[in-house]
Length: 290
Length: 227
Image 1 (cartoon, chains in turn brown, blue):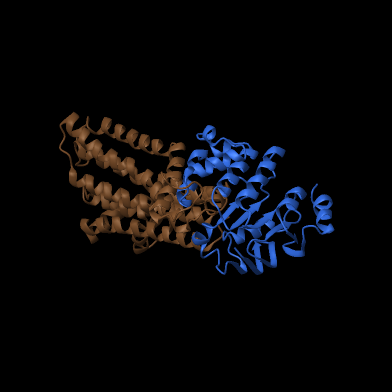
Image 2: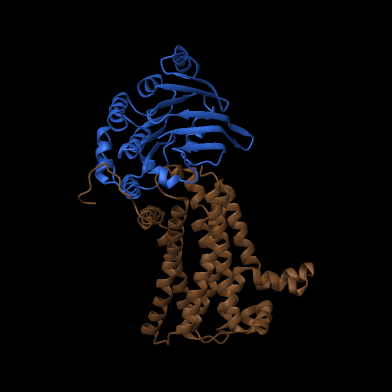
C-alpha cells in the first residue's frame, strides 16, 4: 500500500478481508500438502484405469475412454466424500483448539467472512484438481490412444462430482463447527462416510433382506443418500443396466428415467451440502468462538 | 472507549466461569483484573471481545461486541494469554492482519522492532515454531501497530524477559496513552505501571474494586497469587 501513512488504519472492503483470510487458509492447505495429496490420488486412479481400460476389450458395454472415465468417476463417487470430509471436518475445530480463532476474531472480521474464506479454499482445493484431471485425461486419451472424447459424459461426471464434493464439504464443516474435540470429530466423519458408502445399492438390498425392510423404505434410503443419488445420476446416463446400476438403482431408473435421476443426483447432494453449510454458519454465528 | 458490563454470567458445562459481574470502565481508564487461576479473568476479557455468548450485557461505547464485532474490532486491540499454535508463517499472519486492518505492513514491522522482534528474519518461520517470548512479542506488535481506543491484554508480559518487558512498557506509553485498558495480570510491576484501578475476581465474582495504590493490591499480587 504505497503512500499510506504507517500505523494508520483505513476502511477495508469485505472482499479484501475475505481474500486476506482465504490467503491464510490457502497457505495452510498448501503447507499440509492437501492439494498435492488430492491431485496425486486422482492422478493415480486415472493412471490405473487408463492402464486397465484402454488396453482391454469392452466390458459391460463401455469401451476405451468412456470406460476409463466411467470407472474413474465410479471410484471417485466413493472416494470424494471421504476426501471432502477429512478436508473440511477438522478445519474449524482445530482452529478453535489451537488459538487461531481467538487471534483472527480479535481482528475486524466477521464470522461470515471467515467461514466464506474457509469454504471457498477448502472446496476449491478438493475440486480444482478434479477439474483439471478429468478433461486432461480425456484429451490425453484422444492424443495418445486416438480415442473419441466422450464430452457429454465428461460434463455429467464433472457436475455430479462437484455436487457430491459440495454435499460432504457442507457436512464436514457442520461437524467441524459443532464438535470441539478432534477425536470426536474424526469419529463422526468416519460414521458419516461409512453410512454413505455402506448404504449403496448392494448394501441396501442386504438391509432389505436381513431386516425384511419394505421396498419403499429401501428406495427412500437410496434417495436420501447423496452418494447413491450421485452414483445413479452418473451411471443412468451412461449404461442403465441392472448389472451397473444394481437392483435398487435399476428400479429407480425405470421409475424416474435418466433425466430425473440426473437432476436428483445433482440437486440432492447440493441441497444436503447447502443444508449442512447453513447449519454450520448458523452455529458459528450464534455460538462461542472459543 | 467505555466498557459496561451488567450482571455478566457465563457457564461452561458444570463450571461457572462468571457469576454476575458488573463493571463500568470509563473511556481512557486503565483497569487490571487480578485473581487466582480460574477466577474468570480470561473469560471476562473474551466476553468483552465478543467471542463468547453470555447472559447479562456487555457494551462497548453502547454497542454489543458480539453483534458488532467488525465495527468495534477496528478500534480494539487484543493480546491473548495463550499464543496460537498456528502453522501459518509469521509473514503470512502479519500480512493477513495488515490486510484486514487496512494497515501498512511496515507499521507491524516497526512495532515489532521496538520490542526487539526482527519480523524480516522470522518471515518464513511458522508461528508455532517461535518461542513463547517471541510469540508474545508478535502478538503485542500486531496489537500495538495501529492506534486503538481499547486495549485488552491477557497477561501480556508473562513470557517476556526483563529487557523486552521494559520495551513493552515504553511502547505502551507511546502508543496507547489515551486508550482504555483492560488487563489481566498476576504481576505487580505490570499492574502498578499500567493501570489506575484493580478489580479482584474470585469464583467468577467481583470481590474488590480498588485504586491500584491500595495496600490490599500489593498483598494480593505479592502473596496470595504470585506464587
